[in-house]
Image (spheres, rainbow, N blue to C red):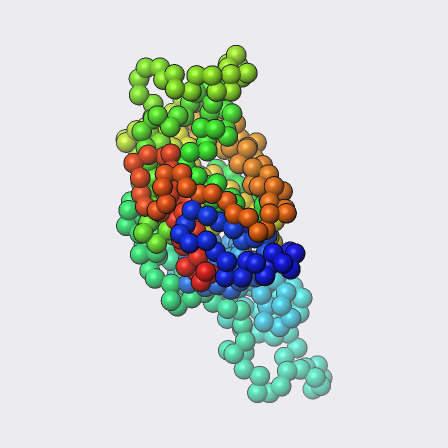
Length: 411
């Protein structure tokens, strides 16, 4: 980054929550601070699903910011997690996405670790033919990867390196916890996984997730077929800390709504030939057809009609990120519901009818602010606070994100 912009950015944050300086998406020093203050600090991070660890020795590899992590089921049935870094020379201990093992062995020099990440053996520790080897006083208990605290809630595994992180339910907050339990109320099954790479800073994607009114403007599938409109009921819930949010959209009331007449008019002659794509069951009994929930810094739960998915944000630098998607069904789904979920899975994702634009717009912003480090965005829709609202024409949950981010970053 240009040094003059960096100097201008130090301590330079506008008062309140309605302006966000653009340097925050481009500054490498900020990205390094985020790793230590947020991803290795007192925040909780989504790691994997509990069903990814079906029994003793079941494991899954994941990321916590830039830090690779192994999550495993210990012999006593507990869920444990540790840094995926050999204490010897820093190699990854575990290379695969997941599986079942008796213990872990680093491929580089064969240092072995138990399911909890404790160092248990070292190849050639006593040398060969009485020569070489480790010192006699080498204490294996003093060497090993960093261990995480873990918490399992609603079938989700979260982890943190910090002893100062509050209990996970307090971290998320009681109101958003109700929304989390609403969807993940019984045992899930994995329907599919994929990873999407996005050309933007990770914060731009989470802002997009928390932006409750862009869908009626950005997503041409919605506007072309007039599926989701802001005139429908719904609202947004924001935890007081800003850490968590949940937005909801109710199913449309009976009868036409012409409030969007003329928008995307060049596309209004298009017709959806397979309307079964939008056939949905009110499986939760509350008329909510869309719920998007996030937990700072990188977890998203999606309920888009009957398509349920969790997403995990993994930063790859100042201008790139991976988005890990896991599509879910419930273990007791009937075949008809399973077929409906699989078909509706085509609504979201990198080629999703609804959300393909979400994968592009962050890159548009990242490119648009390339020379604007001394300027700032305007986040004033719906007022200036970060509270809950009974409508979606607001940026309150975006402001909540920045409230949480600034508290962690000390700015």
